[in-house]
Length: 145
Image (cartoon, rainbow, N blue to C red; front, side, top):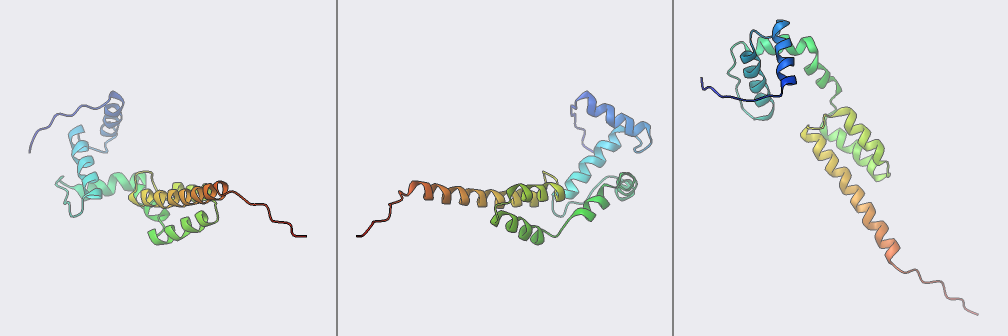
């Protein structure tokens, strides 16, 4: 294995030491290896974790904290989410669309980022339409006698 030196804030190290002391990990090194493998597995297509007993650690640690199940329970298929956000946006209910995204997706989720962009586009379109309406001079109707 390659050795790498990484600096972390003291509060992060304290939390990791607590997890080690509680028996979730055998050592801080095991935590760091697991954390790196876990993140790479989630964000890099085709990545295979190298940590020994990765799946067992993952099941033990994450099931205990119920993170993966909670994420899966709350997720709505992306295209359904897109339809919901679009409906809110078309009706001008931007706050409701934002609440929906915030409730169903984490801020770093790529689907959340796409939904936010869609919502932003609807806002931009509405702003442009309003500007066009206010910039076009309104001619008073001619009175014919």
